[in-house]
Length: 94
Image (tube, rainbow, N blue to C red):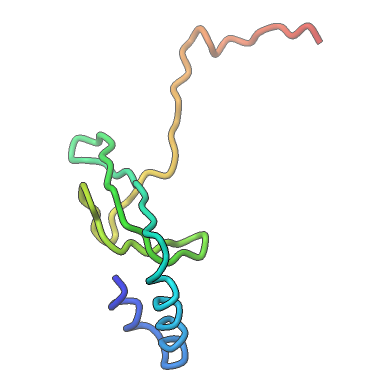
């Protein structure tokens, strides 16, 4: 992934990126898990080694377990089904 990032940077940005990578090389490795769906639509975990992040986008350095390809959709939340019994409104004392 790092090679692809370098391909889109101008010369000044490449220098800054090289400095950031050098500083980050001594840091502890950050791991994470994302969830995708298999062919049947069931959630499947992929364990990753993470790289640089700006808080809204994070570099994936390596896939440790599972599968994740560039462009894959990942699950970002869950929806809980509400049963008919729990969806009835309850009277409030206040």
